[in-house]
Length: 84
Image 1 (cartoon, rainbow, N blue to C red):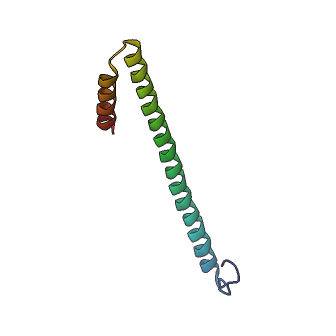
Image 2 (cartoon, rainbow, N blue to C red):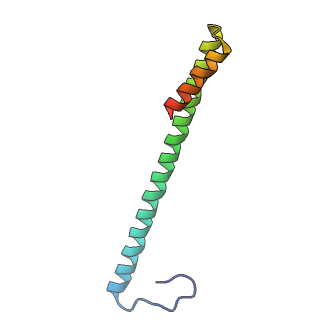
């Protein structure tokens, strides 16, 4: 059991079974890591979107209540640093 032009061949049934087991285990581990990375990437995207939405609401609030531009900027910068 090899890849490409490998001249390594399983000689016994036990070697074949071991090769298949190792291949399946490798596939399972790779799939687990790929799924974990995909899941974490989706969570990160969701968190970033939530962050943007919160700051959109903040800007709308500050505009609606006509908060001074300097104060709005200071509040926004403070919250951006605190949120990280």
